[in-house]
Amino acid sequence: MANDMYNLNELSEHFTLQLTPGNLKEGMKAIGATSNDLWKVPVEQLRPIEGFNVRVRNAKYLARVRKYADSLKKHGYLFQKPMSGYMARDASGNDVAYFTAGYTRREAIDLANSELPEDQQIKFVSMVMQPAKTTTMRQLNALLITENESAALDPYEQSIVCKRMLNDGATVAEIASETGFSTEWVDSLLELAAAPQELQLMVVDDIIKPTFAIETIKEHGGEGALAILKEALARKTGGKAQPPGGDQPAVSAAPDAAPNPDDAAAAADADAEEAPAPKKVRLTAKDLTSPEVRKFQNSLKREAPVMYNTLSSVTEDPAFGTLATETREKLLALMDKLKKHEVPSGEPDPRQTPLFDADAAAPAPTAGASGDTPAA
Image (cartoon, rainbow, N blue to C red; front, side, top):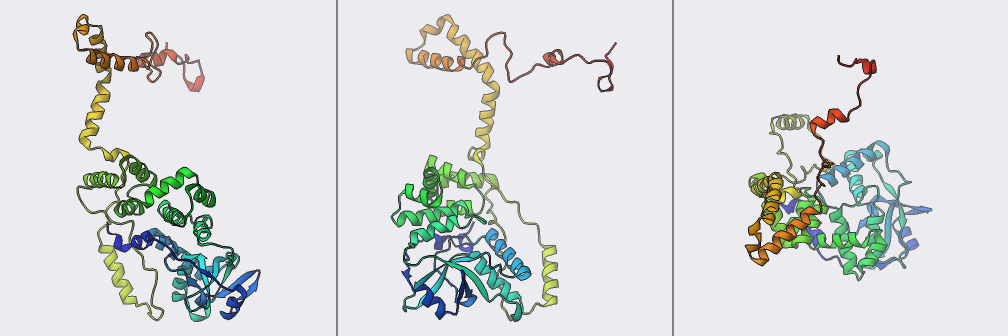
């Protein structure tokens, strides 16, 4: 696992940017945007907020960009699906239309335009602008969660947003209220946000599920959880490095680069000869124990009835009173605990149906039922 192919270093940085409100009408007029309930904004005038997007650039994200780009090429930009924005002033004092939601679509537009002829390229998008004077950066961060329902942020991305809001002065209760999460889930996400980056990468790479990662962190702490998970992963893979969450498909192309049929044929031949990708390994709770421990645990389960009967015999033995007081108390306490779950004598264990009882319990067949006749 190598995190240089993703953007976790960037996402883990403390995001402190604050935007200076700009003049919406004057700013839109300056960039050539028009309004009819929604703002129609030139694509080249859209400005990203540096470091604001919390999407992890893994294979899943890039595949979504590719899918959006293909849809844009086929259907064009749907103006009834606006992007969200915020008019702010840059360092030079100029009004700039920043987009606060729609980063995936914005990247898909660039990809689609790189593959479309000039007269079919997407030149304008629709935007809803947040009120500049009353919208805070904390609210913009919360909108990353609440406005992304069609392609919801994954738990790691959610954890980055919650961490930002916490750093911005919000309490856990306020974060929960503003994002629609429970306080318990916010606490869990903050645990994930504070975990070692190598553990976070296991989550991003889908080697472990977020909830499993959080449970392990809560039980063992961040560093302890990482050590346990790394040991389990090495044991399961035989020490072999794991492939990342998927190949990174190309999402951009030089607009002036024409496809070469010979290159495409060579690439197809290379793909045909390429060995199949190694199967992705995923860790679950049972992987945290070694095969030897699991074998011992299974043996304990099998021998439990014999152990129980033996323990019962020991406590009823006349020599039981000669054992040390502490030993007797431990054995009796264990027997008391087990007897609470003992099936009363003469009653069948509800979890088992003896074979010789199954036939007796079944209704006697009747002549003609299902075409069968009773045995002579």
